[in-house]
Image (cartoon, rainbow, N blue to C red; front, side, top):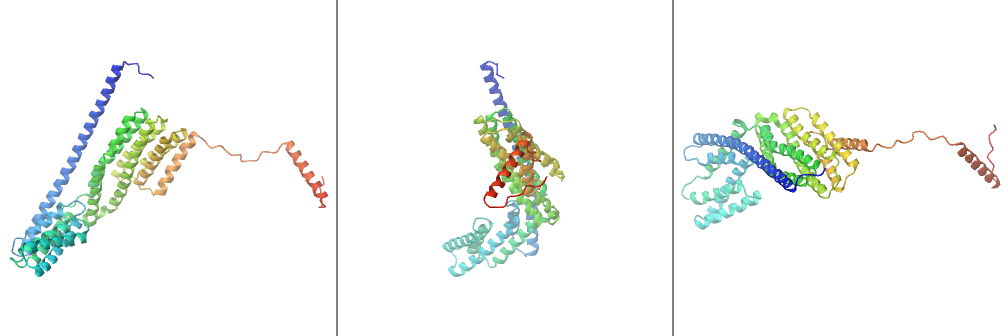
Length: 438
């Protein structure tokens, strides 16, 4: 239907729609920033409490177990273990101990050979850092501790004897206390951390798939491009999800009170991997949708309906997995998505529309795998549902089960052919086939 409004009113309407979309985008970004800050505050509070408790316990143990002296490095090592990236604390502790040992060995050896002095200190530190980089292959706690310990040995050892063993014991006590605090005293809930990290990705997928479906119904190419840009801006959310997976794996590995969560963690980690693939599939679908609209290809109504069903399946999977139910409703929605995609393909599409259908089937398979299906089972379910949708549009032609009875003329031609064949055989000196008696 043609728009009968004057040009000025149409321009004002488009301006209002643009302003409304901009306001929605600003509100969405503000709400997302608020959620991110809330999660950061929670993580900050937990890490700060863990670090304070570890420093106090390390200082107390160093004072009572390691004898008199300023055991500054024990609480420092405990804080360094806690404050490092979540999911790398155990490795950080071993790197810390290895760096201290390497720095002591190189510092004592070179001090014995070269003596003490400014240039000797530089040589000791350079060789300690080089050895640590060769061992670790990159920067990190091992390299920093090797260099720092080499400096202490090269500068303070001539004036104060016996620095080596206290330094090693301080590192051992501090690192052990940090791990004990993380594993036993204040272990985080791994599934809660994973759920909070995955929540923004689920929200983005559900929202943007629904927006993409609506944009395709209205044939609005600008909205499909906006969906593509929004899906491309999820790298930060994916990074936080990977950090949460690393931290949860560390907790279920070293915390005995969380060992019963290992199976749930592995199931969640497998789902998160396929969730990331689904996000990439959604980006591809948004790109193909934009190109199909740009080239004015036909968009049957089943195609946006299939995208909408996919978004509903993502939301349903999050609900069912959160309560631990069998994702039956999610699988039903995925089958409906594949069936609608098959009907759209049978109805006639352009080249980019066919690519979009392929992307839909791939996304449906990835979502089924996130629900726990094996790859072969997921592909078979999607293929069967898409085939059912195609058959609804183009039913297969039934084959004739019984051969048609020959007509009288055909039987007469057959008898004449056999008779001529018998005469020819007789002329060639071969015994003619006798006709059966009637």
